[in-house]
Image 1: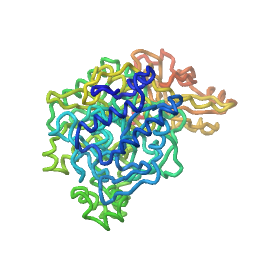
Image 2: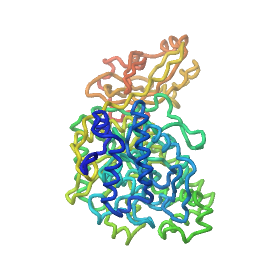
Image 3: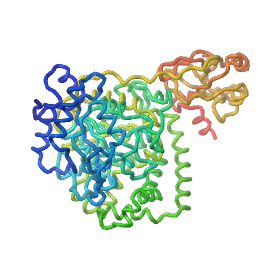
Image 4: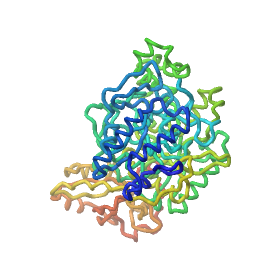
Length: 608
């Protein structure tokens, strides 16, 4: 049987199932007892009937564990995601309907052997980061009930933090899958937009919405991601992860470059304990061999303001336009105030904001030439429920300081634990990177968790033994009759010598980085100036582009390369070794070392 203190992390459950300690029906029986013992904790909007849950557990046992990655694992579902035969409310009783089919992400989990327990509470229509905007009651922090749980995926986070589910599904448009994770001492994975299907999900902002994952460990979140991600032709926003796209970010802290907002741009809203724990996390990264550099957070912050202070509110209005116009009184007062404002922006304002966003994204893209991962606090501080009820708008905005830009900038993100404050409340940080870097983020998050020795959720369980590293995606196939070459200077896209590749039929395969074992110098003694890349320690990951040339034209390309440059073997951050530009060592004598910029483009911009 399940003891009241037993952990529900996936590694522990798998071990017990293999040992025959208990069966899925034993697990869910004990789990339902746990839920009943908590009483009306506002976590659930709809619990599945006991007989139905036990019946599913028995069916899972009959089918067996073979091929079932989530065999007998209990999970919770945010109540804006459909489960066949059960109600979906999106936190609004009058909006309630009974789903005819499960959302594809839910169906995939059930097929993998997972057992749904119920539908969880949320900020109504997924609008808010606080967890107090629900007619079903305000969710309370799992560590101290005077404080908020975070939202909008409040019930989903508490279900995991409180040991009521092994993992749960949330949604994340502005931070709803990350802020509650930070306040619950758990992991919150916000995948790349479109990586998980949004079919069967009540939309908030359709172009930005993501189904998110709450789990006790980063390894658990990765396991759930592997089951749920996949292209869905019925979802017009669904995307396919390109081959090799997930190899941009290193999977180990050592050698990885972490960008952090400049000290003047860090905001903790008066929470000195949060500042202390964030500084301690930076120290941990350095001790593990990572590098920390300050970045300009301005474009990220300005983009974040567009989400609620710009015409993107119109998407929230469009999502429930018929309902809000027909039954405005059915909405929670604060929710109505926010969403109703979305009916006001004009088409002109929408285009102006879109152009502004594109300009900010272009500026922010330069940051990724210097760093591998951005690390920020997940939220500067938790607030008391009473504080939020007294000032629901500005405090909610504070919670989005580090989260609202993520989907606008098409980033992947992982909220991870970063310690416990002196007042007993948890604090968290978020790792983010360009689209499709979820595997690497989970690896980095798992390493940081183990190094801290933190407990799981609110029940104090220790970290399980390290799981196997997430599988590395297969390398893209090289086209027959072609040669791949890594370029780091004037041959890159848009730079003066790029034509030497394109006129020979060259094709850009991808942008990326070298392994962190190189240094780059500006060879100003040569005309025109050019970068010189050499292998040296301590090294740095340098921005490159991988191009593919017809083999019969590669020799002519090499013949045109002037000294002191030449073609050698360059190791990429994925471990792949290909042809690439290297420099003869004599040429760097007296040359400027520009390795910390990490990019020739960045260097050229500074010279200008």
